[in-house]
Image (tube, rainbow, N blue to C red; front, side, top):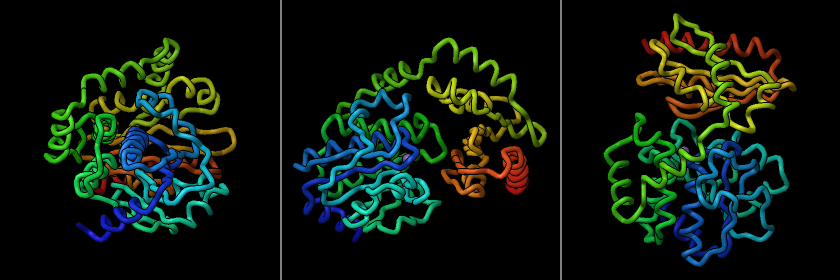
Amino acid sequence: MTDEIKQIDQLVKDAKTIVIIQADNPDGDSLASALALEQILEDLGKTTHLYCAVDMPDYLKHLSGWDRVSNEMPSNFDISVIVDTSASTLLEKLDASHYKHWVANRPVIVLDHHTDVVCDITYATVVINSSEAIATGELIYMLSNQLNWPLNLQAKTHIASSILSDSLGLSSEGTTANTYQVMADLIGSGVDRPALEEARRALNKMPEIIYRYKAKLIERTEMYADGRIALLTIPHEEIMTYSPLYNPAPLIQNDMLQVEKVSVAIVIKNYKDGKVTGSIRCGHGTTIAADLAKHFGGGGHPYASGFKIEKAKSQLATKAECIKLATDLLENIE
Ligand SMILES: [Mn+2]
């Protein structure tokens, strides 16, 4: 057992009330691993609170318990656990709030698997950033085995959801034999995988208006670098109209990558106040997503990443810079 694991064991043993924190970009792994941890810690007799500065997006609402996540924090707690991020830029909303001092003045455990990022959360007490885990949920499973933490069926189900989410249904590059082994153990001990799939699909159904909007997005997709980069810009008005119903990036990005020759799919959202966000997905063998996002102050994985610029000097220039850099990065890996 490593020193970090021993330290986590002790911190949890000594704590009565624990806050579980997700970053400003909640996803299937961060939510499911937070919910798994909630089950484990409650079974250990702890009182838990789930915190995220931003609302849970609709597409995650198939994960039962999502509605227990709050953007408020209790004033009395003993320790906190940050799941699925090591990057302080993804905790900006927490850092800007009065909660930051509450968190920073108590022990903080960071559980992550984004090994391209060195933890820069200055108030972290103990950090595990695992290169072996495909999802934070897998790391929690590993910790549970080592520390004899109880895993009830709901916790196991959430761990399975977190792994399926970050491995894109066990299909992504980082999926290892061990990932399958963990999934096999979970299913063998009662997790109903078809039910998880069905719940996710039911929630991912789109309203007709979104189906028709998708046609417009396909029509508007721009190709660069000899057809290797597909790029789409979503203007403010469309973000306002369609984003509450369905996030445009996941609506279109997989289809972009299904076009022959395309190996990078970029969706840029331009907000009225000058904010720009970018979502980047890469096809098999094209590992430039994290590098591209990092240039704009973001981060992520080799195949999936994102960035956010609070106030771009010029949204058009940001787009041009993104295309230029993506083209350069593509040439570098060739
Ligand atoms: Mn993750």
